[in-house]
Every structure is written in C-alpha cells, then in structure tokens.
Image 1 (cartoon, rainbow, N blue to C red):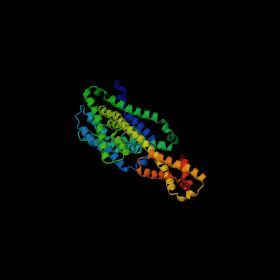
Image 2: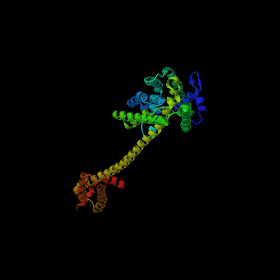
Image 3: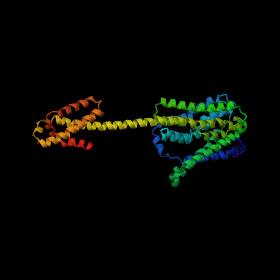
Image 4: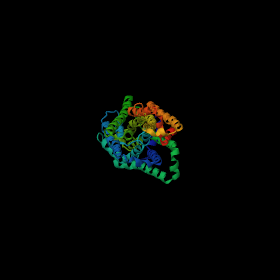
Length: 416
C-alpha cells in the first residue's frame, strides 16, 4: 500500500483481454489443489446424498440470494456493496474449510466433496448469479459467457491438469503429501499477490475514503459471514442432519473463495461498476475474518467432542469391569447352588477329600459373595440368591461340597 506502482502495473498487464498475472496466480492455486486432491474418500461421502444436495444448494443458491440485500446497503462508495454481493455469489474456500472440518471432527469426506463439486459448479453458477444480482440495482455489464470461459481456463483446466499429473506420475502421487507445507505456502503466496494487485489498484481511491465508511464495509463483511453461519446452522438443524454432516455443511456452506471473487471482479468493466480495487476490499475482509471466526467455532466443537470421548471411554472401562465381575459372580452362584442341592452323596465321601473340597469351594463362594457385595450391591435379586447359597455353605453338613464338579471350580481358580 505504501508504494502501489509495481502492483498497479502487474494488475493491468493483459493480453487480448486476459489478465496475465492474475490468471497465472489462479492457475497455480488450482493446479496445486488438483495435485494434492485425494479423491479416494469421495465415494464415502456419496452415502450422505441429502447433505450433499442441501450443502450445494446453500452454497450456490441460498447464499447468493443475500447478494440482493447487499445491493441495498447505502455504502459510500457503492463499490463496497458490489464487492459484498460478488462475494456472496462465489463457491466455498479451497483448503481452509476442509482443514477446519477435520479439526472439528466433522465429515471430512463430505467437506472435500463440497470443495471439489462446489468450485466446479461455481464456474457455471457464479457468473450467472453475479449478472442477476448486480443487474438488479446497477447498469453493470457482466458478460457471463465470457466470464464462464475465463473461469474455466483459470480454474477447471488447472484442476484437471493437476489431478491428471497426480494420477499419471507415481512419484508425485507418492510424495506430494511430504511437501504439503511448501505447496500450502506457494498457494498462500498466490493469494497474497492477488490481494496486493487489488489493493494497489485501489490505493489512490482508498486513501481518500472516510475511515468510518471503510470500517463499516469491513463490519458488514463480518456480519454477512455470521448471517451465512446462522442460516446454515438453522436449516441443517431443522433438516435433522447427523452432527458430523452438519459441521461440514455449516463450515463449507458459509465460507467463500477469495481468488474466484477477485478474478470475477478483475474482468468487470470499470466504466460501469467503478473502481475494481475498492470492490475487493470487503471481499478481503470477509476472507480473513472467516478464517478466525470458523477456527474459533471448530475449536469449540473439537473441545466438546474430546470431552465426550473421554467420558465415553471412562464409562466403557467401568462397564467392562462390571461385566467381568458379574460373570465371576454368576459362576460363584452356580457353585453355591450345587452345594445346596448336593444331598446325601457327600456323606459317603472320605473325610480327607471332604476337608480339601470344603476349603476350596467354601473359600471361593465366600470370595465371590464379597465381590458381589462390593461391586454389584445395587442388584438385590442376585444378592439375595447368593446370600441363600452362602447360608447353605454355613450349615453343619459341609459334606455336601463333595458333589461340586471340578469343572465349576476350575474357572474360579483361573480367575484368581
């Protein structure tokens, strides 16, 4: 902003109507997107077809409708309103949205599908939406056919080339994950260059604007993102989507793609819409603030999920212990039942054998009863049954224990 001359010249460098540097920046961004695009999980997302339909409708139809409201805002200069309207018409972000959904424990496959499908369909829907929305209040001339071709060249072709490169060249496919950080930095450099060009174009006009008007435009961009969030939260809740799908819808349906908005604005006729750089200002604010706002929301979702996961793990551990103790108690009850029904068979056994079995069976039956009293005291029926069994073992006729089968005692010995 301090020295706008280089950015101004770069922004206006065009060949046959094509903005060379801007188109190159977009091509690099979407080529990297194609190279890093792993579509193996996309088939998993197809199961959530209802969420897919709603998410795309929200992104490409419902959100652009708010562009009509943006056109009614009495901004000075009016280019701020036009910029917000354009931002409402573009598809979702490329990488930040998917990253946030993953961090929030949402449906990452669905988020990726929204990114791919939304940005490809946006090549067709965005020019049409921009033409309808801007044409409702201004005499702006938007050649949607020419804009569609330019978006196809700068977005669709690089994605296809990048994806083909990934699939056809095995070393790239196997190693691209190792270089995600450098590729991410290159991607951000392209976005920074686009912003630099737009701010340089608007610098001379921007410094003449009242600070309050600029701040108001920035505030409106933040409010617009909150409106998108609230709309998607409400509608996805009313439609009763599962929580993971709902997270993907809320984030991906509310975020917007700055590079696409910047390219669309760059091909407007400045004679009909005004300063193109000023139109980009609210788009930049929207893009930056959506990262902070959605990161805060995703962090809250992640914290809630992790707390519930800890509670569930603790509950499962306690339940496992209760089941193990209950199984041990059931076996002890079986032993005690045999003791009480042994009958006269024990009287015919030798005193030596009788003494040994008495000590084994009586000891484990009493230990099992103690375990039942300590762990399963809230089960009165089982406690009553074990108490009756224990009472039988306290009788004078301990010779009944002779009839206890070793197959019933051995598991208890193994558990000890």
